[in-house]
Length: 263
Ligand SMILES: Nc1ncnc2c1ncn2[C@@H]1O[C@H](COP(=O)(O)OP(=O)(O)OP(=O)(O)O)[C@@H](O)[C@H]1O
Image 1 (cartoon, rainbow, N blue to C red):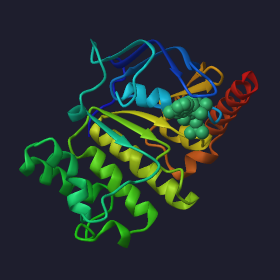
Image 2: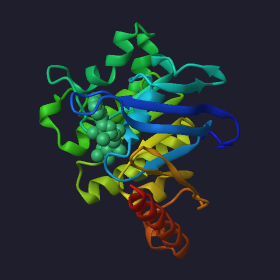
Image 3: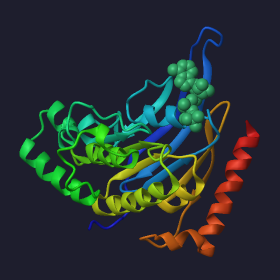
Image 4: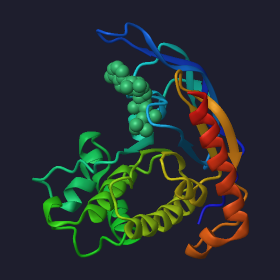
């Protein structure tokens, strides 16, 4: 298990802004002067009212969307992480229905002409880590929503990314499945040492998983507050009812409410 030493910044966002143009609102400012530095191996969640720009910020950091101004740097160099060093998980698992679970997990390795022996070895480890053993030959449509999302997470990790971008990955799942996946994600984070940027609407989930929580305000989207989550790891299902956990949850909720009132 890798040790967590969140000191060295791996992802830096400086003065980033974004405007979208549409027929009824030319140049609508969605993000304004966002500054953020994420340390190597850090787990950072982004919360905020609907439409405040969480997904926009994450996509800009992942290089999936252009910005209107500012800079994103990865590992000290201007630019977003190269595809081989990052993984992305969205709310919809978006698996290819004609490929088996294993073939879906191996897809990034196939596309990027990576070392397939290493990728297959890694896929086997991930099948184990994500409780997917025994279903590698099944097709996505034979799986529950939770299992599909596990496959999507395994796919995002097959190239051993340094940074993982996760946009409401558990948003469509029931509460029990979600809690189980939060435990698994915590374990994956500890084992891989990956830096994780995680968008969620669920405050308890953000507290459970994060080292830091970024609360955004809307119109224009900006950082309103940053809350450190200094809770002992590994966190367990009992953590949700700890006094310290609840105190942080209350602080995050107040930040969220204040951010929502600023809109
Ligand atoms: N392609 C686009 N063109 C024009 N406006 C857009 C586009 N994509 C997003 N927006 C607008 O930008 C703002 C921020 O959207 P974004 O999806 O980043 O917010 P969010 O905080 O992730 O929202 P949610 O929590 O509802 O998912 C919203 O007002 C949205 O309508």
